[in-house]
Length: 200
Image (cartoon, rainbow, N blue to C red; front, side, top):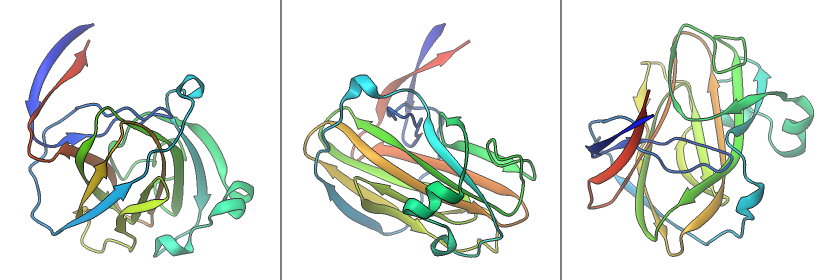
């Protein structure tokens, strides 16, 4: 595969059960207030990490993330699917990931994200409908309601990383009806990164 260098400001996050940060596509930044979160390093055995976020699907017409099952209840009620490799999806009126459903579906994804260096990373999401994201058990994105006006951006969160490494991530998302979108973006504060993107 040929590798092409891209210089971009905002990047889609390619998520893996080893969730590495990879640049994909340009996005124009939004101007919402930035929330700040500081993370303690998680100790993860990287040898056991494999590509793809583990996923559970739920069938219901949720109006808020809080209505979705969590913990042991989610494990009992959720239908597992194939791992999800990245979050850059505009489903339109089509099925949400591998759920087979285009409406009335909840999704829980778990895995790890790798921060390659210390610093401040800015995150935001574009979704339709609700989304909530935790890194190392700290909420970084919370846009939990039905999106009556269609796709919208979450607020921007600054995540401070003292030590590089792997951190656990939990993502909750639901699509009630209409069109669906789920995209996650990142950048390092104060820098435009040169990242590699593989092209066929």
